[in-house]
Length: 166
Length: 128
Image (cartoon, rainbow over all chains, first blue to last red; front, top):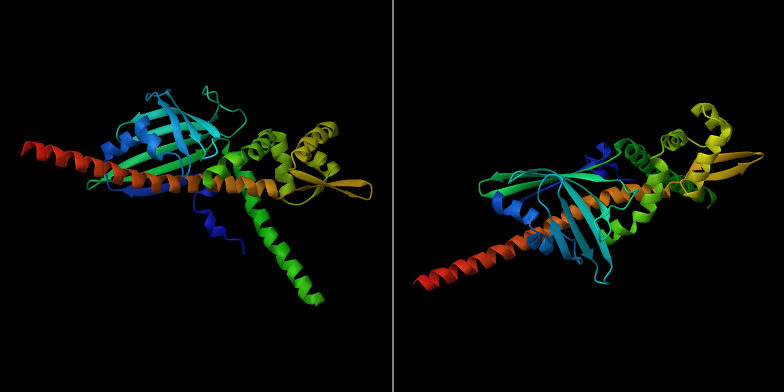
């Protein structure tokens, strides 16, 4: 059965929010999110590595990095900082890019807002990802959901037909 | 896994996205959401000229967003489910990407704190 709830509460609004608490002070968390030497160590998901990462930490500044697969396939990404409030908040837009930080045309850009909240020496980090052209995305996602549900119905119809024939 | 998924989907996503970013094509997709239609029905509902609609339908069928079913002397247009399901999975891959990233960050912070502990112990030792 198509699990409607697994989509999470935010997909309907074309945004995704992921939160977690870390046992580290907020100032350290902010550094870990904004300094290349730190980011190289954790930003890429396993088993990817980040051999190159440059950051110009100011509004309008570019964060450009390369993610390398174990097969040596490189994927470059580029973000532009929109808002920087140390150590509370970081807002940037991102898209895939080439090695010269030119964005790859035609992909939906996304906006990420990272909020750092300190709670008794620990830090709650909330990452919100919102997509450009939310209207087009909403139509497309709704269809994805509808198609998923109708596919379940198709299977049911087939199954009932099979039962009937046997 | 997540990232392979994320990168692997860029080509499909790019074609789907380019097709949907044109307002008339998005409108056609919205109309077809409620069920298959003939070119004539789409022309009537959109209030556009037939050649224009045909041009948009060609883009949508070239990118595998719609499929055409000939029925007698009519051509029925219908949405294909795959591109939309891919888009939904692509969107979900962002959530998994952040979850994985946070897992790795957790490990990295432990490593950092261990190094820090080690350094401060050494300083204390030196002070003795």
